[in-house]
Amino acid sequence: MLDARLARRLELAPGLPTLPAAAMRLVELGNQPDVGTADLAEVIGKDPALSVRILKVANSPFYARRREVTNVRQALVTMGMNAAVTLALSFTLIPTLQQASEQGGYDRQRYWRRSLLAAAAAREIGRRQCLMREEDLMLAGLVQDLGILVLDVALKDEYRQIAAAAQCHDSLAAAERAALGCDHADVAAWLMGRWGLPGHLVEAVAGSHQVALDVASPTTDGPTLLRGAVALSGAIADVWLADDTRRAADRAAQQVARALGWSAEEVQALLEAVGAAEPELARLFEIRLDDPESTAGVLEQAREALILQNLRMVHEVVEVREQAQAYEQQVRELEERTRRDPLTGLYNRDQLFRRLQDEFTGAAMGGWPLTLVVLDLDHFKQVNDEYGHLAGDQVLRRVSAVLHDAVRGEDVVARYGGEEFVLLLPGVHWQDAQRVVRRVLERVRGTDLGLKEAPQLRVTASAGLAVQEGGRPFVDTDSLVAAADQALYTAKNQGRNRLVVDPVLREHA
Ligand SMILES: Nc1nc2c(ncn2[C@@H]2O[C@H](COP(=O)(O)OP(=O)(O)OP(=O)(O)O)[C@@H](O)[C@H]2O)c(=O)[nH]1
Image 1 (tube, helix red, strand yellow):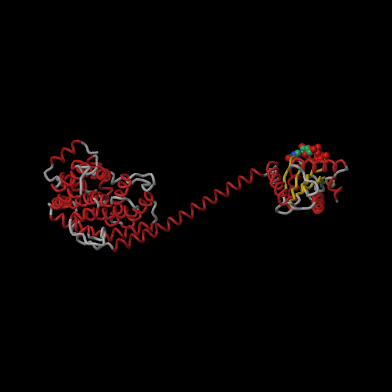
Image 2 (cartoon, rainbow, N blue to C red):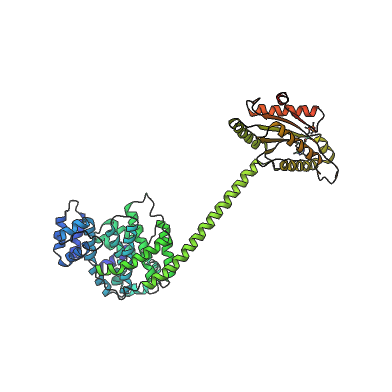
């Protein structure tokens, strides 16, 4: 917003650009809801220079149809009303701005190059994002800096002093805000508002220094997209005007990536298209540039900067992926830890019952046997009583390692509780399972428990075995566990240090 005193000063300034009569009529026409092609053709037809230009554009590759357009009415139909009004407005405004740029002390070449490049950039972004109203984009891009001309003409030396210290477009706007409380985008919007130009154009120019984030989101409305494209167009134009091209290209690419999600390659293609469109637009608007073809060097430097940025982005993507993998690994490890018994590292009781249920269902569906063994250390209380609880823990760890190493990877070894363990052996018939368990008991018996206070100490274990197999299917996991428990009870009663199998199996044998 403009402060009232500044607005008053600008209003009274002698060289303030005024809206040409033809443009005024076009604005009025644009505001009428039921305006037709004939009305517009009449306004344009009164200005021969404007008519010629409109015909030229209608026949340019931008709009070209199969048949040549020979009169203004056909041209308006070809382009559509809105496009034609906006283009005609652009044509009628240019001489006013040119006059202002000749009068003032601001670098004329710099002004027009930025305006043309921004117009080309806004139009290209619109094309690539499939935004309608390319002419609006072009016009808003073209006039976004007109506030510079206004301030230059109205405040003269005072403005030139403000502008002199600025190194780039951003610092110019910052210096304006510091000295005047607003920047040239506000001034341009103020004047365009006074001229009665369409509100969406005024807003787009007012917001031309605020690059919005995520402009390309599917919920964004037309005026926001227009504003976003115009704001980006300035940063793109600055690639050609900045002292440090690489930095400007880097910055523009980052802004475009953030707002539209484009890759560095897409930004490079955009820069190439803008570079090619600049002389075309200069011809269209009849703006003389000292060296319009001097874009090759700039594009080359921009390309190098964007290749580097691309590499950086690839690197960042790899880093992010690695971080995600490390995080997933941590989550997996945490999950695994919650499944394990902290003392022995074997599966805990919860996990045992989960696995048992899965294996039980799998065995029933697949028709293969499932052997369950409950194994309990003998007289373990004595170990604790004689050597202490820590020694008891050590024994439990050593025995657990033996159990873990004695079975196959697909078998399950769990700590059932205290000094009791469970082995689950899917797909193993009970005769084979017997051999496995006997071997396990043998190993437990021979295991050096590593107790300093009792190097010779050894422990024995008792085991009970039950199988879910064709002959006698258990109705559920509890009854399978109960059968194995019962066999273990028998083993203890028969004197320990032995395996007892579920008696039903022996009957079937
Ligand atoms: N050190 C240690 N001892 C445990 C742990 N969990 C259970 N115990 C002990 O294991 C012993 C189990 O003793 P009991 O149930 O009487 O059985 P037992 O002495 O092995 O005798 P039988 O099973 O009849 O051969 C108790 O002394 C418990 O305190 C543990 O995590 N660490």
